View 1 (tube, rainbow, N blue to C red):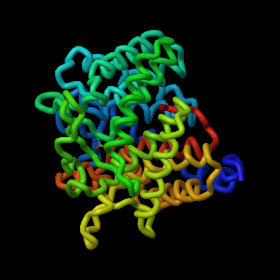
View 2: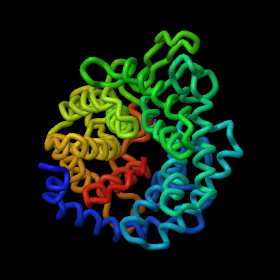
View 3: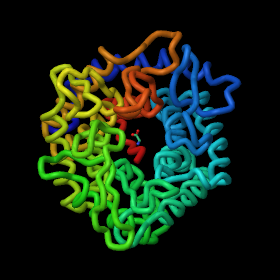
View 4: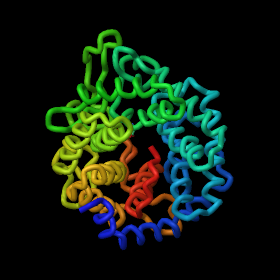
Length: 374
Ligand code: GLY
């Protein structure tokens, strides 16, 4: 079966989810009135900002990305205007600089980058190129992109596989191969040092910044060193799929498929990923966000391979998110509720704008909108 044929078998679900989003998101938008921050999570039925880093908080591109997703779904100007308002707010992050990190891909590719691609706004293109140059500037020629500032000189994290798309875009947009070469050097390192033989992924690897020797493998947001944080697994799955899409390098597709096989083998009957696939058996902690990210990756893999296994897994996750984790009420501004920031943190069972964005992105894919935000 082609992807299109598979997709048509799910059109009822996709249309129902889109209808619910169209009813829900005006509420989410209304609740941004008067805010001086970009939404991240929900407290007392109201939007709340990220916990630190101010305007540089790494998820701040996801709210405008949600707005662009809704604009694609409805054509309504209110969403475009809110996306542009948030994009303008993000300029303060360039001026801050000290709190910026490798997540400039999450911040600008899907805000100003999408804005440029959808509207041709030249200011948006400049913002996105500036972000790409910041990311390229974090490259250590030992072979990796440095994640964070301060003492984290040799730290790289699997999430960065998603930020690489900003560099692929920059090379395509400028004709300068430097950005793509940096992205591929990092992806090669990630395939070698993050992905284990069984297809599971480390969250963080600390390298010697001179030699690339592995010094430490911390637990990061997962349960323990050597465990398998499900969102990190989803970043790997979707990230390697996208690296293949942007480069055609077969090793990236092979790696994406290996991580997908592991993800599918670990997900339980309810199709909502545990926070960490290696957490204690009786620990019920889940992460809906990992499911939404993985669903996007699985649908792209299904397009590439025409595999029913990937397609069914992606759709089963989306149906489970809709049935078990979504709050479709008019009081609560976000959609998905059972997201977890990190296993050992306090941020359990919360809403997160990036979970909602990936849910929307997956629904757009299921409705046959093939615009690639990444
Ligand atoms: N480290 C980014 C995330 O929470 O997925």
